[in-house]
Amino acid sequence: MTEPQLPADTAREAVEELRRTRARRAVRPIGDRTQRIWIALVTAALLVCMVAGPVGTLSRLAGAVLAHAHDGRLPGLLVGLTTLGTAGLLRLSLWLGPIVLPAPELSWLLPLPVDRRWLLRPRLSAALLAAGAAGAVLGAACGAVAASGDRPGVVGIGLAMVVGLLLAWLAAAVGVLAEGSARRARLVRAGSTLLGLAGPADLLAGHRPLLSDVLAASGPWGWAGRAIGGTAGGSAPVPLLAALALAGVTALAVTAADRSLATLPTGDLALRSRAAGRAHIGLLLLDFRQIALVAQAAARARRTGPGLRLPMPRSRLLILPWRDATALLRRPGRLVAAAAWSAGTVALLDATRLWAGQAHPDPLTAAWLGSLLSLGPYLAAAALVEPAREETDRLARTALLPFTPARIALSHLVVPTALLALLGAGAAAATALLIGAPPIVLLAVLLLLTAGAPAGIGAALLGAYRGPLRYELMAVSADPYGAVPFVLWYCAPALVTVAVAAPLLWHAATAATLTAGTALAQFAVSAGLAIALTVWRVISSVSRQTAP
Image (cartoon, rainbow, N blue to C red):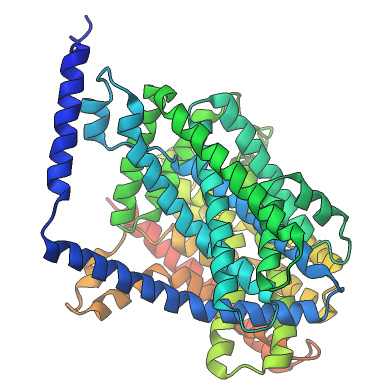
């Protein structure tokens, strides 16, 4: 039996009354509006101050890299960055869903027989605002690269941020169009994957400009790179034409997205609303694992056929490695991410070496740069321990296995370590060959990804088996520094990787050869201590979680 529907006239009257109520609530006292404007200005000033330092450092880093590169490499580098950024923005818009309704509007207002565009248009505006902020950051980074060693000008960075904002609006509008059609979503997902592969390929292409020219002429992702290339100065007509073309395509896409609001399926809006609610709760609780589970549930819903599966081993000893290998084979994106982070470590280490040879950084700068260089190996290892995280999400999955919980937990060291050594070493060697990195850079990364693979996987396992979030650590004191113990506990796995990898990578960034006994001895000792710490903490955590 269907629920009674309101007449169209009554529904319109209800919507009009809601609109008048919103208008009355929007009329706030002058003091309240002044306070909101003041908060917005202070926030903007803080964001500008936070972006100014990294923008200058990135500009000097790009200048050091381009000083050793082939002449004319800058336009291709910008096209590669904007192509990679477009792929990320498209993926983000597909995952988050630009149009997300809260539960009350979904339940009460959406069934009314009125034009849905009135209801969904504010959500589209909010999505464009959020996407514009991300695009502005991308544009500022590309503008710093366009300055290539010079001090970035305010006008140039501002124009680059506008180009990034247009690119982000285009990605958000495409996400809205894909939200109403499964076929469009598959096409956008495939296109973003191709752009995600073409962007790094262009960045690593060196002095071969063919791929850059093809990407620059193929679509808005290339037009944005050409437009940002003109923000550093000059009056060439190509950047201006590229910017105008990007603005025109963005306007058309936003208009089409606005018109498609009335045809968005109710079922898809309901699914996105529930998923967004769970993700929002995870964000408020600082439980990023819950957000990852929401994304995985959405990926499983899109899956149409059975997943890949390895043959069942006959030996009892191979059961646990077989489970890890099958789980990673069903998620090839994890393998690609591990290879990508390994390749990125080589590229970043090579760029840091070029910059450090000219800048001679102080110890504090060296410390945070070493930590930044260690982020790639940690993320590569973290991408491969997903089977361990799945088991900690549901401990009952391993209850019937004829192994002790400690053995099951430590078995996750085997397959991820082998994959990190093979995939990481291969990706690092290929990247070093493409960009022409010196041998010390390749040797340091290979040493870290092969001999240091058990320590890296062990540090990632610490994060998988650390148990529930310890919010009581934030109650140490009432001041803002009371959150420091919780942050240190949360970042402990990454800090273990930093202790192992940062001294070795910074030595490779500043030394002539990788023969210093102190650096190698420190690496060996810290890697051994990290493995011992992993075994002790994982066993104690598993014993505590499985205790009756």
